[in-house]
Length: 84
Image (cartoon, rainbow, N blue to C red):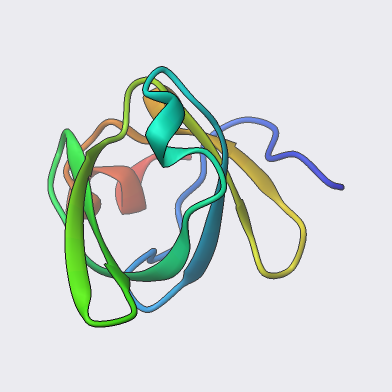
């Protein structure tokens, strides 16, 4: 499993993710598609429901195996894209 080193600048909306660690145990193992993102949250579409999850306090993997620590991407999407 690869991890993201440095800033993660890619678009997340549309990505399929799986939460592998979370401060709220109920979120561990959830998989779904990111349908929206704010500075502090992601909205995850799971089956017929949407859950809003705080970025801080989660670690998730992308389909390609990259692992992302939520607190490292706690920026507005357009601000994160400008980060190098």
